[in-house]
Amino acid sequence: MSTTEIRPWGRFTVLDESAVHKAKHIRVEPGRRLSYQRHRRRSEHWFVVTGPIHVTVGDEERILRAGESIDIPAGAAHRAANPGTHPVIFIEVQTGDYFGEDDITRITDDYERA
Image 1 (cartoon, rainbow, N blue to C red):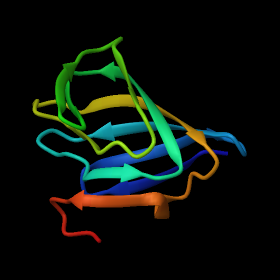
Image 2 (image 1 turned 45 degrees about the vertical axis):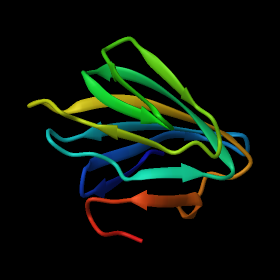
Image 3 (image 1 turned 90 degrees about the horizontal axis):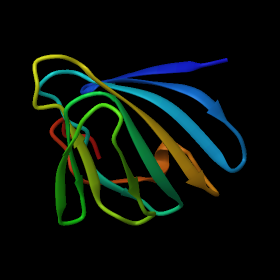
Image 4 (image 1 turned 45 degrees about the horizontal axis):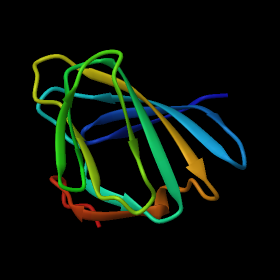
């Protein structure tokens, strides 16, 4: 059973999860971006379905297009932003030992969340 959650930047749907992974379908609305954040207990792999999407991982900034992907190691600060005029979709696969939303440490956030 999938679960969808609405966020200020768009929404995500949990596609699958187990004790060692979680997979999400993430939609970022035009002009919106996720918080600049890090996770202590999980790494992530993002596969872009529709783009372009502006991705920041640590000091590296890249534009990813449909079919491209990036790995985000546990502890690395990262962000996804949609600079375009159409929604952007990517699939996020998390691996690690914990996948709760409370493993997010927000460094900066456009929506003033803690």
